Image (spheres, rainbow, N blue to C red):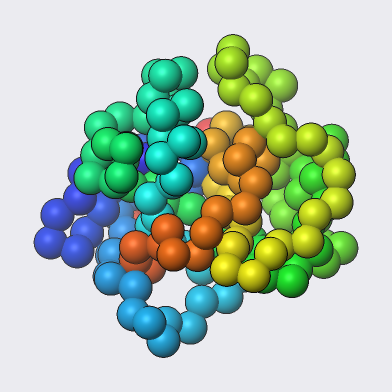
Length: 159
């Protein structure tokens, strides 16, 4: 969730990334993205409708009326993703803080544990907390959903 966005800056208070101030720039066609890049994206409308119905997405500028999300890219096309009780593994490497939250909101349905190959034109996204609403719950998202790249300027570690 981007709480406030202005003049290329975003302040976030969500559990997806450390609270703080981020510089956000438009995504260029030749932008060099890598595992761990922080991006802004618009979730597909069906996901927006579900999140809004559950009460954890605010109004925003994205299709379906949802807010812009800010997440880390954890897997690109052709990467192998394994979702298990201990979290998400990408190409065999465990991604920190990606186990499912046992206290997730009622109605929030996670995708099945198992192995997935990221299809062409898609990516998997994750936050830095077990409380993040990310690919553990919705799987791969089209890369054309990306809107920008974010760089942290000042952040606060949560206790």
